[in-house]
Length: 276
Ligand code: ATR
Image (cartoon, rainbow, N blue to C red; front, side):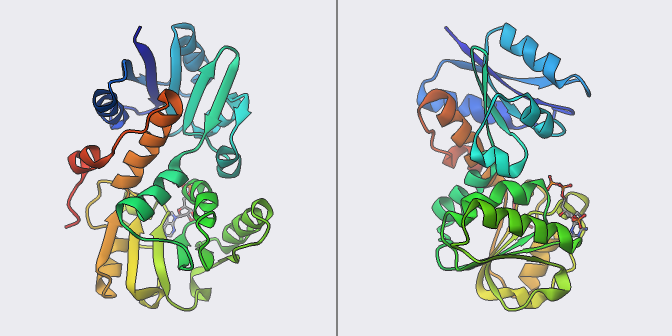
């Protein structure tokens, strides 16, 4: 019997998840159907209830429902707890298991696809919103030398650093600050702000980019964002956007649902927008 999955969001037309999961199902020989659900604003729970009643086995969750999904879940994984947001659900009877695979997807893309180990490296994360919350634990688990969170609203970065320290007993130094307080150069600079969506540039100094640094914009499909341009001006040769993260978080969800992890190379190739 064909098992049903879907992505829920509003709007939902732009979602690449059906394309990605359908490709994964083909290469792994899994009998699934993956569709888009336009969730009515204020009607998330009813829409998910209806999908479950019709036999749905799991869902991805995109904007603006990641917090609704957090409230809807019965069993939250630690990744979802720290992120305060859910991007994948699995249904089993009355149980709603919930995960946030954005952070593991990012780390998998950095380490596996881009060959950029985080171990012993200085990592700078721009932004202290949902994207950073999702990324923090998986990044810390890689054992970087240090993680600095920088945000326009410095107090939000400090609060997130405190939270990360509580979750990971202080093995890796984590600090939060405003842009003018950042010192030194970093091996990996991650733009997890929403600035690239509106072609804005975070107020970042060129000095943060170490010569052999990787600059990574978590946004996908925007080409050379102002952040990546700035990194280029600083002499950074290794630039990447979030297409690999998108594919890898999907692969994590697929593996969680189906017990088999698909190769992501073809999907990444298909979805890559050149950085020009
Ligand atoms: P998301 O879930 O995508 O992370 P969010 O929770 O609204 O979205 O967080 C957006 C992040 O991008 C915040 O850290 C925000 O900084 P502030 O907390 O100071 O508002 C950051 N951000 C958005 N636009 C920015 C810009 N033009 N320059 C720098 N940071 C920006």
